[in-house]
Amino acid sequence: MTTKDIAEIRRRFRPDKSNISRIRGCYVNEAHQIVATFNQSLGLMNQEEAEELLTILRKTLSGTQSKNLHEISFSSAQVLEGEHHRRLTALRDSALEDESAVTALYETIIGNTAIDGSYMILLAADSYDYAAYRADGEKDEDTSRTFRYFLCALCPIKLTRPALGYLAEENRFCNLAADQVIASPALGFMFPAFDHRAANIYSALYYTRDTADSHPDFVSGVLGSEIPPPAAVQKETFASILAESVADACSYTVAQTVHEQICVLAEFKPTTRDEEDERPMVSKRMVSGLLEDCGIAPERVADFESRFDDAFGVGTELPPANLVDRGKFDVKTPDVVIRVNPEASDLVQTRIINGEKYIMIRAEAGVEVNGFPIRITEE
Image 1 (cartoon, helix red, strand yellow):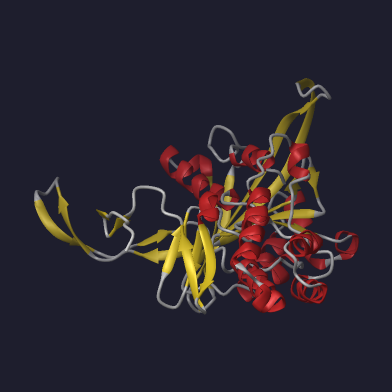
Image 2: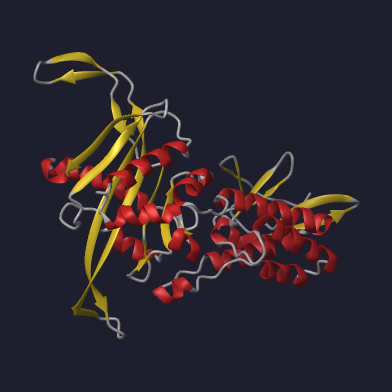
């Protein structure tokens, strides 16, 4: 799904926009047992409650793609005869009215979720009637389509602390008891995906709030598929295999070049859906080319390629934003950390003087130490 596709569905989660009439789900306690189920009409809630509930669900479609949001793919075999896909389809087709499929989903989620404490499973089905677009990019009001999907969100239950409060109607202070509140979703998914403004039963959109934990057991158990390693793990693994393969040949220039070129890819901002489909990725061959241009020996480049395939899989391409922090460029020693504006990394050089290793920074103006401006003089 493109960012525009996701934004279009996100806008549905308002009482006056969606066709969501009911919210169903269950409350799961710390012992991983269902203690209550519900199937509540939004029409019986006041407007504020309905808006808050839809806002919680909408957060399952928020965050950064390839970090919080991941497109989960299903093979042809899964679509034709897979148990997981069959259950998802039954839930979508019945608008969550297939009781056996709903119960099976609850049980599968509970058996494959490692959320600490109590949580709620929230389910909502929607039917979106929308106009198609003509080849010239304008809406074709005479052509109407319908996208039917459902959303699942797992929301931890948080216990508020007891606190001192004031009751204005009684004009007195009192201790307010601890209470339970629904937190933002920890994970969830939408099925099917909404690709180029059409249903794609070969894909689902998966959400995880924690970019360091993609909950692979949940994805495998509930969706019957696999998910790439979390963004934080991809970054750490990439840095590790680069350092191990290049080893002592990894100069400041090599590190600077790799960082700058990946940042260029990460800064790409698509303006159309077609450009989003062609979003640049980091491939093994691309990084190998950078190493070769920096004069790294062929055997070290080959070692990098082998390690890359072992870590990520042959033919895998990685989102550039997962591998670099565009706003950060740090130079570290055991005792010193130098934080450099990534756009000014050429101000830093490394030198060996009289057998000693030095990091040299060209100071042009405005040098401060602990907030005090200093003057640099020849000594």
